[in-house]
View 1 (cartoon, rainbow, N blue to C red):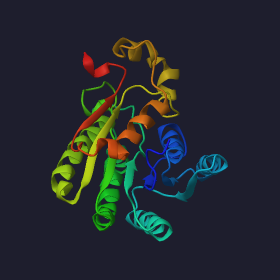
View 2: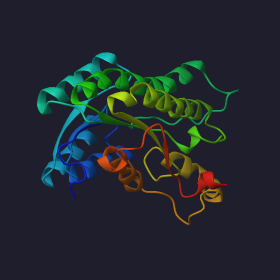
View 3: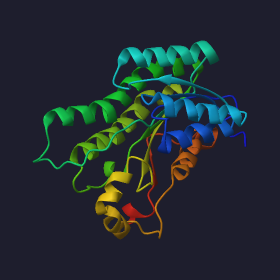
View 4: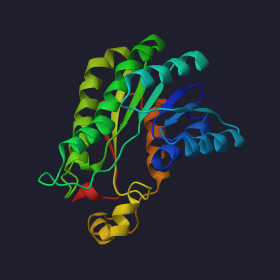
Length: 249
């Protein structure tokens, strides 16, 4: 306990799945959490659970593709807590599309949420981290940002770009003690992966996952805690892969 004492963390996509697990575990480790999502009812329940367990958190409705909403989230965090130490760019959506059957409007939507939303968040949080004397940005990518995956081209393109963007930002802002790393989950049981599992993808996932089980949201949240904490103070521009052995093939 206490690995994140004194830190202020913004976590997007915190209403369910990995984002909810991150918000709850960050709070347990002492962070003050700004939890954001467009799904307000579920988000409020997450924050209520945190508070009932003695944590410090508040919820904000937040469309990550909106610059104005990003400004509002960061301003609220600074007004309440005086700074921002950690940003977890977790919000994202899946896209079961191949290149040939893809509608360009859908392509743009996936890029807006999975990539551009992260860029906007970094754009506006970095100046606050500079004022605070440093910080940690954790971009939730995917194993799809490292290896090719069938039937999800827009998703993997966005996640791959996010991986390399994290490296560029790490180089640009290392002098300011701002660390930027990407985190790459494998198959994690969440509401986002549930549809593909229901449609028969489990045998495919099992073929590539070397451990005899899939990940849980908490498995990714513990990795995010490490990257948010001072335990990873000499780690930037790196990929933290938590994938049950998928990319070991």
